[in-house]
Image (cartoon, rainbow, N blue to C red; front, side):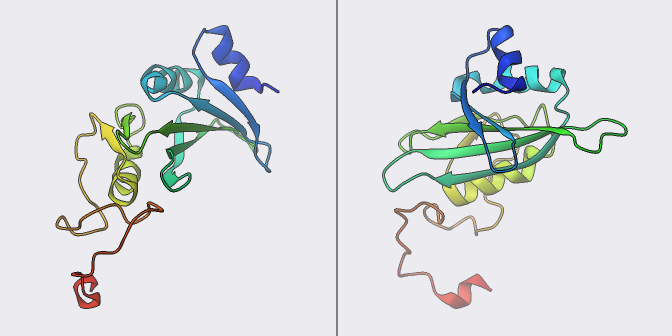
Length: 158
């Protein structure tokens, strides 16, 4: 079943795959990484002027990594603003997604955190570097196949 945003994207010939709705009725749309910049700009023009959140997760060990964007259309006197969830799956061998920092500035720290924890490289991000872990940290702690190095001591975390 297609929602309003999916219908609008189809009318404008933007490649996507409708993935239904979540438990709150928010439309979920899956897109390819290479289509993200044009779709992000189109959604901004359509009125999605607020990036509510961005996160990344490991779908399964050895499988895809996902980057998820929750966008909201904020308007005056809107008691129930329209929302959409954009999901992008990338391979763990080459986890690259174009950054949307240039569309929504609030993506800055959120994409950096996803990079730091999951290892997804957000191309053209102006300051893509670790934000939570020390620069010397090896690996991506939130990947399901992550093995904690035995040379890190607990005291180094404080």
